[in-house]
Image (tube, rainbow, N blue to C red; front, side, top):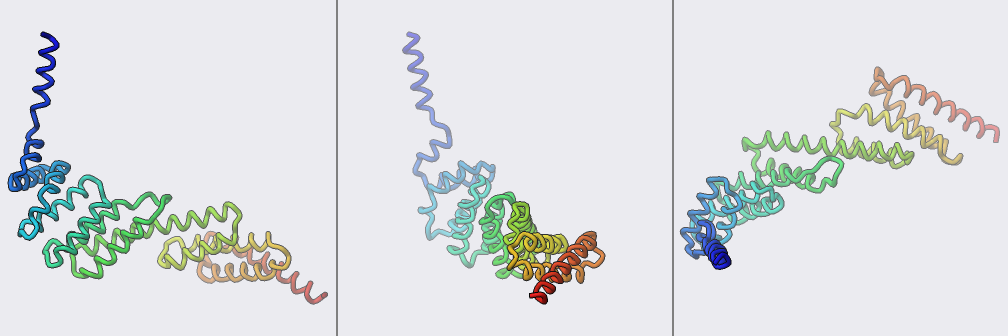
Length: 269
């Protein structure tokens, strides 16, 4: 009897479907659509998404499809599936180019990439994609009230890229790969001409050039001490009162002394 009762309970439980399961299995397009909207308004994103998927194809050619697809894209965003959110927001813009929701969809496509932008120490592929997407938005909708937010986010992500570039150059310096450090610091100044860290970067160029010259073979030292002196003079012209100025002057004096030795050696030869 106990076994029979247990089996009955299990069978009965298996036979009781939830309201959501009944709706999903109903095959009633209108019911599924309206319940999906209810779940969406209740912020039950997963159930809303599941039901939207069931009726998308059935709504092709119907006016409701535009709003349905837009909300469908948002379910991916709210569920943190940002790659797919970007895809569906972008696809929305392509599918409904005349929609009054297109501007928001384009912004959300870019913002989905922004949400994927990781810590500056990690790969910055999505950061670059987000910057490009926001810049495209600004160019496409120059009068949009979202433009200031796009510019703010672009600046934020460029700071992240700048910090990554600086850390990479500093790492080369710490590893005593001074030539790579010089190239990296110079590229940083080219890629981020507006950087607030230019003084420190130019100081590191002076140090890197001097240490590379000191550790070079004799045949390359003269050329590299000249490069050091050029970096030092450039720094002092820009930052005469810098906290690094005295150290840079000392490096410049040592480079000049080395160059005089080379000049004397050449004269003697």
